[in-house]
Amino acid sequence: MPYQSNSPRWEFTSGDRTTLRTIAVQALAMMNGNSPSAGTKPVLRSDYDAWKNLAIGLTPTFNYSPPPLPDIR
Amino acid sequence: MAERNRAQVPTFDPIPDEPEVQEITELASVVQAFVAKAGVDIATITGTTSIKTNGTVYWGTATGVYTNTQYQESKPEYQPDNTLQWRLTFTLPGLQLQAAQAYFAKVFFVDGTSTSELTWTQPALNASGSDQVFFYDKVVSSFATVVDVAIRGADQGWLSADEYTAFQNRIAATAWLNTVKWNDGR
Image 1 (spheres, rainbow over the protein chains, first blue to last red):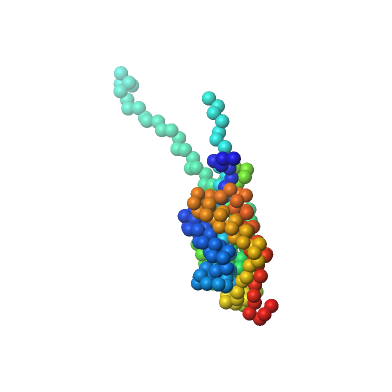
Image 2 (cartoon, chains in turn purple, cyan):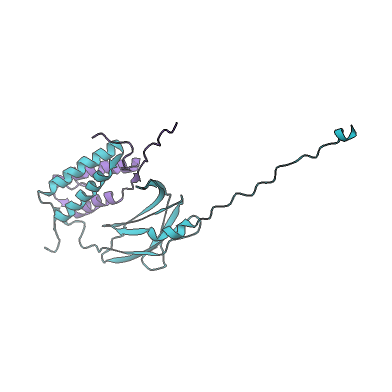
């Protein structure tokens, strides 16, 4: 189903979008058993905790755009 | 004729009343809506107001004694019932200590009003940063979901409500399912 422009959604700032890319890159590293900071195995707790905190630090805005008003003419 | 040439006294419209200054009464009713959520090494204080306002959070480790501050501006947030609220969010970093620690905070708005004191307990630092984390294979699917959704959010700038919930849940799932090798051999 195509996305409806008036569907509720979380919108990210440019800073959040950069953070999301960092989250993805680090998740990919840990998925392969590598610690993001050093790139070596195993994953360090400090890196794992820092990665989880990245998600906590996101500040998206919940936007529910109301449907357009009916044309009463 | 003389009457006709007499200067006419100009008439003026009555001076309009001063527009009433809108009293900021909403804040008193919304301040209790502000909450503090403890993360691993971070806490988030967030709440909404019905009018746009900015504020500064003051926080510390003793009630009434605030040693840190952070200023933030509110952002518009549409509610499911189409009403507009203004969200003010503070992310407080570096809160995790060796022992569990109670924190206290107050948000002061630019008009001088404030929330009541918020308090929460930050979990203790139970392990060293050099501890090693090993993941079960089944965690891989959670990481894969996080990667997929995070890239989509970064590329398009938004996520649906369901996607964002799934994103948060999959991150939490890595903690539910992982195993941690502690320094003391646990």
